Each structure stands twice: as structure tokens, then as C-alpha cells.
Image 1 (tube, rainbow, N blue to C red):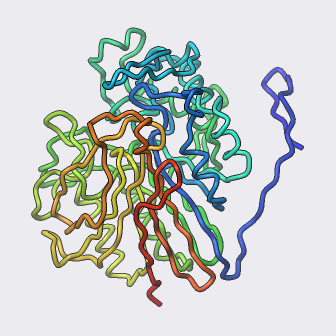
Image 2: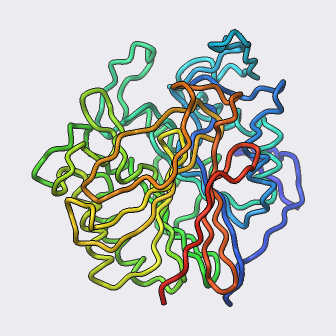
Image 3: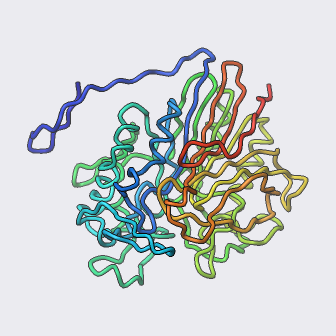
Length: 407
């Protein structure tokens, strides 16, 4: 039985907790992933059963849940009612902290508390390990370190570094992660490293990236010199740890897609820059990673992501690419789980992506009521066969692909 105490020693509710450890011997395992919870003003609607996508993920009984970023929308106010384009009224559960953009630590904390007011989320989290990543909306849209906002909704604080420090503390309090190298601050808060490896037995290692903390400003992305989304230390860590991995499958969870163009006005929020030729700007970091995997004979890598608010399966092949020093690989995109639906985004040809499958919104910003909310499911059998599927908020399988491991 577990309970938490605050700094004054006040004890919260006690609950019985259960956990299981992964087998070191080859054994079947599974995980789900998605992103984008309670964005674009679409919050917890009790009339529709709350965040139903979480119930669908829970129903698959996965061994692990990877939330690939945008765990909350701190920059997206939630109103009590939203009139949808067809005249229907969406009714949100509302608390004070979600009615404006988050600026204070209390408001950032409230965003995370809000999601856990949903019965489906609480039930899922009660018996499923959660591996959380952060992206932009945990702080504010498309941010980078050093940015100063011009958004007039921010009246108390516009320095992104200040907002991000508060957002990161709240995120880590509600999505706890362990890091033996965590360093304390004056407040006593220990900031853990976000990028990390999670091992789930003989068949699966998940490598979670942090594509926000070390990100250079958003530009058109056409720089001849390398610009950063991973940073040198994280890039070296990723190559080193993937090389060392003895797991059958090395799953890399990235909070930004590789080949999809994600615009930020006239600049690019994502890695892709619309130029299908040699890697430029932030693309050069990904090129280094992919080349290193090829050079060292790394096999059985799969990339997963969310971010773009639709689902897709992409196959990358040097035969189609402007940059050719890599082995073919798959990237699977899943989300949103409880936000507006968009897509499709344009493809950038630098790494030779091909859209094998996609499911997008009927209209941009589509309400979750339409059912186009998505998650991914990965199942590895005892022999190491990996089945990747993309599913909607009812749990229906929209696309599935079996991947045989290369030995």
C-alpha cells in the first residue's frame, strides 16, 4: 500500500500498487503509444464518456504506455462549452487552472491534475507503466530555449526559459522519471534527464528522446551548418546505447517526426525543411544518427512518434532519398488521443519517406467526437516477430504490419 506525503507531512489517499518486472528470457510483450492530450480546447467531456481513447488503449492490456509528447496543452485554454461546426455543443469539465494559458507553477500543475480527473486515464495509469516524453505544449506552442513570446495572452511572463522551467517541474511531478544524475536546484527540486532508455525484457528496448531542451530556434531549416534538435551529448548517447542494446527490437520514440514538414509560420518547427536534397540544418543530426546505425551494423530499429495529430505508417528507403547513407527503416505516427485532428502534412524527400498508410481529419481541427483519435500498438511474440498496428479511439485496427527481425 502506497501513499504520498507533502512537505508538511500531510498524507494523501493510500492505494494498493502492483507491478511486474520484464522477463530476461525471450517472452511476448506489448506497448501502446500516442500523444496530444486535451488540445485545441477539447477537454474531458463527461457526456461522451471522457477521454475514451485511454480506455481503448487500456483494453489492449499493454505492458507499457509511451506518451510521446504533448502530455498536456498548457497554452490551450479549455472553456466549459465549445460549439462545433455542425452546431453540436461540446461540454468540457473545467477547473480554474485550464481556463487560461499556464504561466505560474500552480497553473502548470493544474494542467496535469486536470487530465487525471478523467476516469479512463486513472484506470489506465493504475496498472500500466507510463513512459512520458515532453514536447512543446507542456510549455507553449513551438517553443525553443531563449525565446521571448509576443503572444498577448501571456501577461505575467513571456520569457520561455522561465515558463519552461515551471512547466518541466510540473511535468516531472506528475510524470515522474528517475535519473541517478539528477541535479538539485535551490528549491530542492531535482531535474531528471528526459532522454533515456527503458528496457522491457529480451525483445524490447525503448529509447525516449528529448527534442525540445536542446533545440535551436525555428528557422526555414536551410542552414549549411548543423543546427540542433538533439544536441551533441544526446546524439552520442543515442548512437552508443542503441549500438550496445542486445534487445531484438530497438524502438526510438521521437517527439517530432523525421520526414514530415511541421511548419511554424514561414519557419519549420520540425526537422524537415521541404528541400528533398542533402541534409541541411537540423536534418544533419538525424543523418549522423542513421549513418552511424548503418556503419555499426545496427539492426531492427523502428521509430515511433506523434505530434502531427493524425496517424500514418512511413517507410524510409535510401533508394528514394536525397541522402543515401542509411539502411531502410519504418516510422509509425499515432495521435492525437484527445485533441483536434489535422493532416496530412507534406513529406520531405531527404530520407526517402513513402506514405504506406494514413488516416487524417475530415476537416482541420476536427472534434474528437468524429472518432479520428488514434494510438499505436506494438506486439512482440516470443520468437521476436513485431506487429505494429494503428488504431482509432474505439480500438479498431486501421493498419497493421508484421516486421520480421533481422538476425
